[in-house]
Image (cartoon, rainbow, N blue to C red; front, side):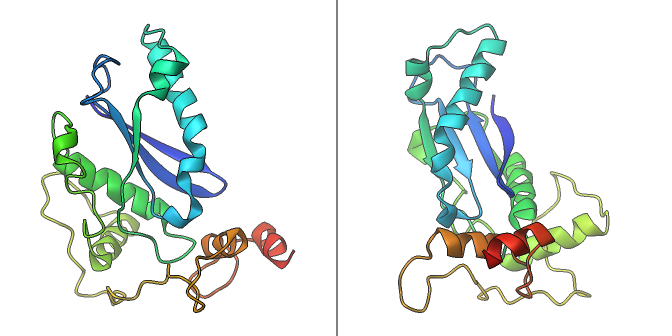
Length: 201
């Protein structure tokens, strides 16, 4: 059994997948956690202590009094998946991760086949744009559908138009840069007044 948990922290969404939940904690071959995050430059693994506390509580609710040490032994994997292009897309990316995972997830997870389909080429930007269009127009989505393809009536962004890049200097963006990137709209305006004040400061 796989458990999917959507997490939200400081205005950002991502997806935690608990693989083979219910398996023995001593079976390290199959039991693991996978974190899918559309903004890896925000260093999502900093939330690892919170993630492990959640997993421990989850085991306790099932009557399994797992120790912190045993929970700490569960492997946490950060998959390199397609990344968002601005500060507003984490929600739709998380939804698309869920949708595609439910369509393709193996019944039993094995490290031998990791990362399975969860790679940087998992889907294209035109596909997620079409997925978002379907959500916004309340179009039915089924797990039996073929891959979501671009809508002919919509002008979608170029697949190579990726904005999450290193600065022109060739260095990685610092925390201030990451905050600005993740809290501004595509036109460069802050998402709301609170973030505008924080960015000015």
